[in-house]
Image (tube, rainbow, N blue to C red):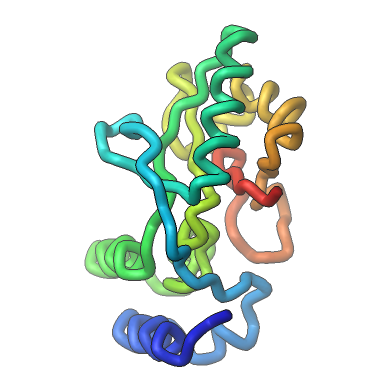
Length: 176
């Protein structure tokens, strides 16, 4: 359940970033509250500690182990991101001169990112650029398509998804 305090915090961040008030009424994305419990998983590709909910962390580790048996290395790029971190991502893009409409096709507004749930993971392969469409051409992506559902993961943003987010073959969310 979304608390009033969280709701107010999210929309104060939206106001500060210039996200139109209409966003919350028009986006098909859900408003997500941050989880009460997160556990450390591993260092990501960049050497940063990452966290997931306990069930997502267990599923991620099991999925990585199974992939490794098939000769596939799944590389974590990012996992949990709080709403303040999400706001900073957007703020940096605004400071670089990007407009908010374009940013919101790549990054969900604070409160609306699956990363806030502690169940979403951006996944990469060492044989292609990170967070690029080219990931769909990797053995890791093919393995995920064939096997991720067995571990409770699904790709959130396919081509022409109804959420208006760009195609993200690297973004997978634990939904079990």
